[in-house]
Image (cartoon, rainbow, N blue to C red):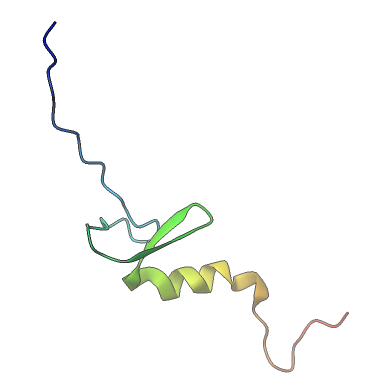
Length: 62
C-alpha cells in the first residue's frame, strides 16, 4: 500500500471585527470566542465593555 502525502490546507484566521486575515507572526487577541487584530482592539474593547460604561453625574444608584 502506497502512502500519499498531501500538503495541508492552510486555514485562514480572520479578525472577528473587520474580517481581515491575521497572518503568521501578527499579534492578535483571543477573547470570548473572538479573535481580534491589533487594529480593531480598541473598537472590540469598547463593544465588550459597553455594559460597564458610566457617565459622570449619571451613575446608576443602588
